[in-house]
Amino acid sequence: MNNRTRWLVVVLVLGLAGVVALWPRDDEPGPPPTPSRPTQDVSALRAQAQLRPCVPGSEGGVDVTCLGDGTRTALALKGPLLINFWATWCQPCQEELPVLDSYAKQPGAVPVVPVLVESREADGLELLARLGVRLPSVHDGADELRKRVKAPNSLPATYYVTADGQVRLITDPPTFTAPDQVEKAVR
Image (tube, rainbow, N blue to C red; front, side, top):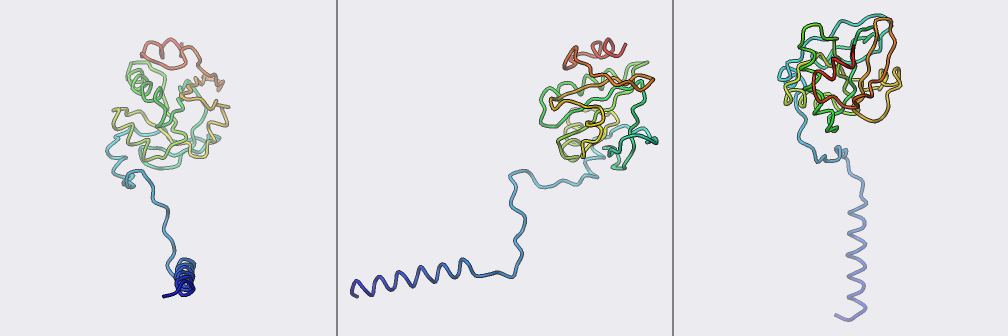
């Protein structure tokens, strides 16, 4: 085989490979593979988390999803109430949630509502179950509640809502490490 024939064969093979690569296909491409674990059944995660029921919604509240049962509810900014914004990737949040749960179990405690943001419901349920936190929790997927209270992007962020509806950010301490700190902040 001479040099000219070899080059002709190379060009034909490359041309054929290009045609095969660009040829349209009938089947639709699937979603890109994700490095995360397979999707879990949210109903099973809700049962595993065993969260206490959310307070029924009230008119004028912000629409959120109750993590315990998946229903939409309107969370009213009427106190006294403690609202804690958290995310599954936030390490200080993971340390603070059990503290808030312990505080909420004390007699006379102000109701505590953890608000999951920047995370999927399934991931939040899985984390709450692992931490043993049973607080009635909500998911603010659209960030509506966070916008309403003008919450910062940093997490965790905890707000105290007074009886007359005033909302104030708790900055001292920035993260609760003991139930007595929570008690002090709300009094």
